[in-house]
Length: 159
Image 1 (cartoon, rainbow, N blue to C red):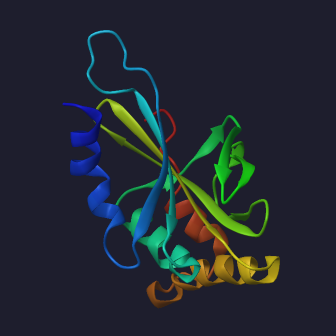
Image 2 (image 1 turned 45 degrees about the horizontal axis):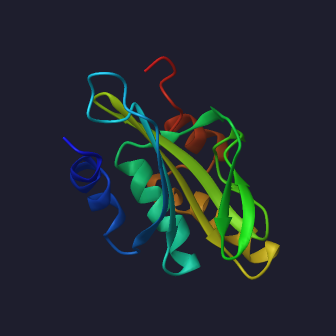
């Protein structure tokens, strides 16, 4: 199955419900010998409107994605600037230039999908408010502790 068909079947349907996430960048790893799909594909996605970052991110986690850890840094152009994505912890954080970000991981058969979900806000204060609102989405499920959210979506190491 070609990469586009794989993404159309497994990933794109998770990006299209409201609030929609737009695919901004795609970095596939070279497929292993004998395979049509890469072992890993990295996608940068962002909401059409920054306030959609928190609910769209939770939607991906509810669909089985997990927080991703231990990635190497990568440089990606965003809105005319080159920023670093990845590196270190994938849980929600304030990135460069007022971006709320998180990195998510899910394995589909032989292919790992890594999503960098980011949204640029006019100020760091608004970015922090978006991160706070992300964790606030769990209040209705009775989860009011940040550590409990992180534990719920921790990666299955060795998976």
